[in-house]
Image 1 (cartoon, rainbow, N blue to C red):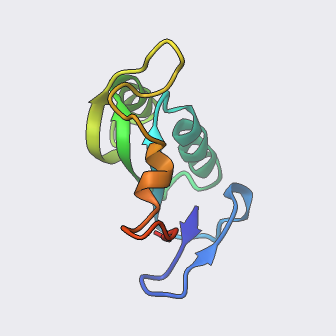
Image 2 (image 1 turned 180 degrees about the vertical axis):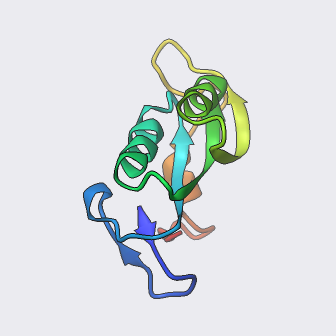
Image 3 (image 1 turned 45 degrees about the horizontal axis):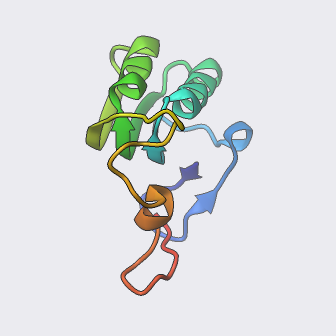
Length: 114
């Protein structure tokens, strides 16, 4: 989770070390089951009930979206591709590469930061 004031440098924090704010944007590359995002949003809400929380991810499943909507119907969810299916191995079908690595690399293979 990155907590920031709107401009670099960004201050990286862990779930339990988040400063007080009115708005949080929780970003993940993949929401496969949605469990990680649900835990993060629930953790924020338990500490800061009045804060607005927004979730954004690139690749996701309807299961993940449904779980997120289930914890808060008013949660704002931004997702680029929400209709992936999971295979028997638990990986997203149709993504024949590690989507997390792909999303965090530039065209030269260098790691990017969000």
